[in-house]
Amino acid sequence: MTTPDMEGIDQGKLEQALGQLVTDMGAALNSALVMIGLDLGFWEALDGNGPTTSDALAERTGVRERYAREWLSAQAASGYLMHDASTDTFTLAPEQAMAFARIDSPVYLAGGYHLISAVFKDREKITERIRQGEGFGWHEHDTELFTGTEQFFRPGYRANLVDAWLPALDGVVDKLTAGAEVADIGCGHGVSTTLIAQAFPNSTVHGFDYHDGSITRARELAAEQGIDNVDFAVASAADYPGHDYALVCYFDCLHDMGDPVGALTHARDTITDDGTVMLVEPYAHDDLAENLNPVGRMYYAASTVLCTPSSLAQPVALGLGAQAGEARLAAVAAAAGFGNFRRATETPFNLILEARI
Image: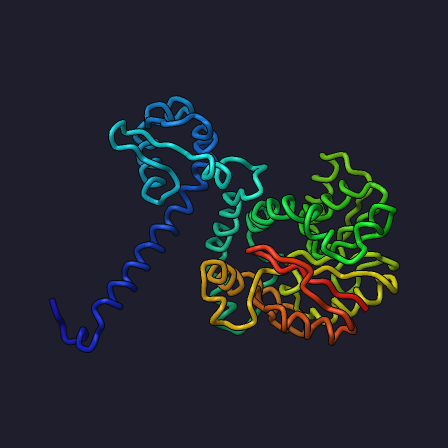
């Protein structure tokens, strides 16, 4: 069927756009189902149990079979489960279980859906701030964002921080092994802070964040783990206390700051003469065209509703964004007085950058 407003329309491009839209709408709706599966124990009940019928899942989790079948079907349609038509069973492969069911897996990402949920809760407020050209502070978000942030980043930190990222820095591991002072800026719930403290018991690690709720949670988690060489305090990146730090860290947070130059200037003033600043930032190329991929898509979306509004709510409001790229970050470090800047290592999700005086 052709209508007047279809004149000059490339049918193939239209079908491609509609296909992507349908795919994305399905993904958006299914994100709620992923979380429902977490809450009801569906993913855990499927892990390691081989081909499973809807009746079996319902029995294991105590839910009505009709709900179990619909949920299983949605996950199979999403490619998150395998369906065998001959036996009408659903299987969670080990590789899928690592992402959805095993919270200690280095690639467990299901917890990050809390982050997405928080964005939808705050959508109307963020929309109005964008309309007015104003920022939206990190502390203003629904508290589910903080849980989602912790759970999204924790697997990558646990898999890489101690074994790969710190060893990639010049001389840092030796200093921390012998005993040194470390500052973790914008520490959130303190996942990165406690990982460093556990790995280097001779060092003292200080976590700082301007959000008091996050600091309260960080203290609770550290106490639960019995870590005694770590402490947490409410402080901003521009005024956190202490000096003679051998290492100052920013984990996925410098781009959220309104004045990253000011933050790094304060870091420069608080490290030792041979101290190191480590920036862990979302992976990005310097050119937009090279970031138009699935990882870039996720980070640009997060940057629009989380990172950039956070920066624009603060003094200076530089608005680096989550896809700032190495060149812009290097310029920020140079403006803060760092003469040495390099990419120490990387992962598909992160750039690990080293700054020294």
